[in-house]
Amino acid sequence: MGLDSSGKSSVIMDIMRALASEVLPAAQPGQTRLRVNRFEVTLVELPGAQRCRSAWRSHYSAADGLLFVLDSSDLARMEEARKALSRVLSHPDVSGKPLLLLANKQDVAAALLPCELIERLALQRLVNENHSPCRIVRFPQPQQAAEDGEAPITSPPLLPVQKVSTNGPGKRKKKVKGMKKKKKKKIKNKIKSQEPVMEQQQEEVSNLYRRAMLALKMRQEQRKQPSAIAP
Image (cartoon, rainbow, N blue to C red):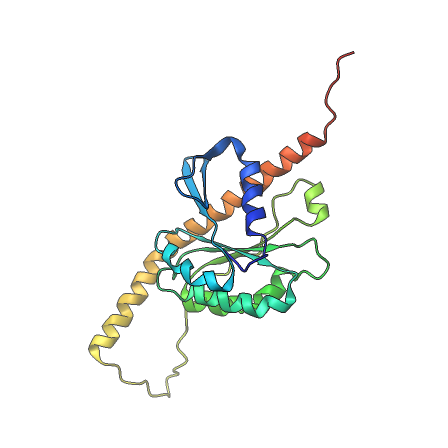
């Protein structure tokens, strides 16, 4: 998912070309099914036009993770992207699910770096509020990294930060009713129990894209090699 003209279709095509031998028949239009190791992965491309974004929510409950494609060079629409991403992460069916933010069009001079995107999109706040771990991947890779055959450069994962109480020994704590306090404790325990699962899902999504990009790199190198011609 992502805004229109962010490059979603190109990203999916790159993954399909890189893993061409592992593409499975699609069950529905707009879906791409891949077999990666022992996993069967279904990628669903969602239209990014503003009038179409309300339909995104119908896919949230079935998703194990989210890939948000961002045109990192389109500074004029960065606020629009922030609002769209905020609405996605605040949905109850998305809360706790891993997010892979693909910073697309990094080969454009005006493209923002991951550290700048974290600030522009208020990513750390969104991660904390919605308990969704996030990782940023730069695409395409910087030229030097691509020449060295390195995996796509990713940012350190943004993980939800547990809130620390600011009530000191001399401050009076607010009274909380028994039922409300019990509900808060239940929610906190549920979030804590989901942390290992969220980290595993995030790693699986990152590994999928890393594998796709490495395979695409190998295919590109093979095409560059001159073919042997018999005399």
